Image (cartoon, rainbow, N blue to C red):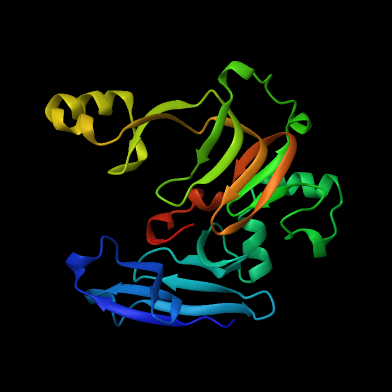
Length: 257
């Protein structure tokens, strides 16, 4: 598919997991890297299940000894290479793409009878997509009333430590209150946050933000990201994340956005 691929074997103490699928960069540009801890150098089962050269995607199969196999969709989306952990047992690239769509998105495709050839476009009758985020008209699911007093402007939308998507107008409702900072990009509960400050007062200077985990999110206006073309939503849309976070192997993706 026109990409470089390297395998690096590193001492066990230098990698937090048995292996990691990553994207690195050198003077020649970006390349895919499979980083393997020394104890697994001869026992990690790695295969390419399918390559789609025209679409610049491949499905990678990785199985550590005595552990469940994992699948990773590696490819090019608009401007950059990406790696996504794939739930389920996909054996083809097209199956992996479908597996990354939430059930609600797949149901909507079926209801609207979106042709197969259009289902993986970034814009079709069922949704708009930018990277890992899907956008569906709020009216489809009987969306929450938008309280304009709590609408945020040029708000970052992110899954974890990856680059943020910037939303011109964003509204969040419900969800669990969490505190996020560079040391805890996935957030900690309020109780854990208070505990950290009690035991280490200097933690208050870590740049915390109070956010909500798994809220219902709505977006309107321009959605910007350095790796993707800007999209514009003229009306309120419900925001839905892909299914990558549902996989057991998410921890083995080092570069995810």
